Image (cartoon, rainbow, N blue to C red; front, side, top):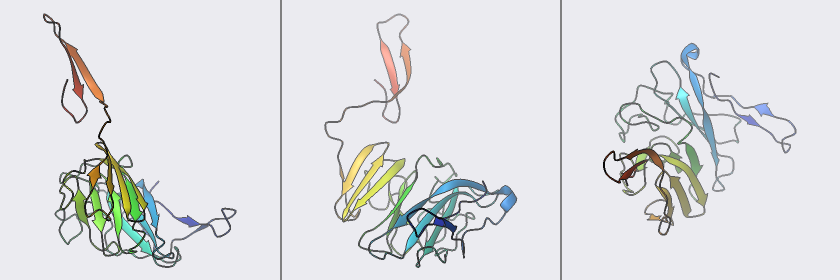
Length: 222
């Protein structure tokens, strides 16, 4: 596939119609890559729809396309930041940067990927990738607020897979466990106390001593 497309049903799923007026079109279709998208809606403004897209709009992109927004349930779309992939600026700058990747372009596709919108502020969305990212101006600009290049939450683990929004409560699940914020990710607490788990990726034994060593994913050795 070359691009993600969005369809809407107004009759409980009996019929579906593509909604692509103003929608994303890869700038170099022959070299475009589609890795999927996430949809977010909010009771704070029920006609607003956000769609976050990952993949490549052209050959030189590195996994991040951008966010499209509709204010009329998908009938028309805009690109608030104007970004369809690269060129990417420095992370956390006011210019367009790569929300999905580290500085070197490394990203993890759909594995670490989610997006949710605030239930009380229709201009605020959160994106889960290698890091946790926030936009508070309707997807015009973004800030890394957790994990890599964090500007706020120092103890959100890298590789964020899932965000769950329930009013003011925001749950964030990552390779480091589960975190809860009760103030829209201004602060957070880790909810890993009492959970003991280890993911071993390698083992070795001593050849002349009674030792057995395991290498843990992310968390050292035992």
